[in-house]
Image 1 (cartoon, rainbow over the protein chains, first blue to last red):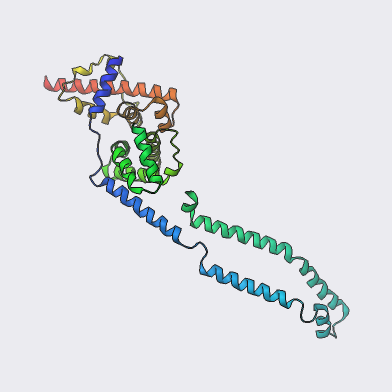
Image 2: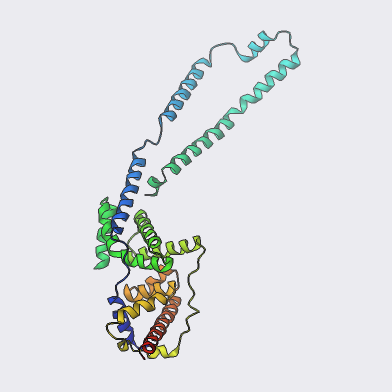
Length: 136
Length: 188
């Protein structure tokens, strides 16, 4: 196959008219792009944190504050137990106190795990619902 | 110059002028559509696939850094979309084995084809080429893409692209030769 023939083939191919898509092809592509852009803009305009989230957060903070202020007041659990259950023998009373004593050491680690997993789930939800924003 | 034009319009699109993308669509719609049509063999499906290719390109434009030619990048998206569609439809890229390459094709003189028939004969011959070789011929001769760029589009190595292109060219000559013989028999 000579180089000359190759050049001729190229000239021949370049003179050929390729198949064209329909007349409105470009307009259709651009319309689709504009549609997708408007959806993207809508997603961007949407608030990431909805009203529900803020309500729950406010309730949670209020409860936490209430617990904090009320923690010092009232009778101590041990005294309360003794007052409420004066007739119960010592074994039952000790078991009761030891059970709540053990529970008292649990919350810190459990709460840590729960809060961490909640935060991770929350971040995951934000990212997955706004993947387009994070992609750009 | 063409690459500079592309970069200019791409930068415009990236800066928020979505309308500038219509230049890209207008410039490349025929070649993108031709590849899709060759693979899907149906105008409606080909238009759909070409449209999807442009939208994919638009959505991924932020990943285009301008290190390679934009056309290479766009054709790669189109080619991959075609392969995905073929897999989805459980079709195959047509094999070239059924066309026997003859040595006499080396001797074919393109000037021997009557001028008024040339375009028609070439189109007829291209239609008979399998999808992968059609794409190689189209990119190399029509789009003047380098072997390296064609390799990037098709995912073939440079040496493999060269071999395949050589075979495609010989096959094209064989097909043209056969078409010419058939025409000659018809006349006689």
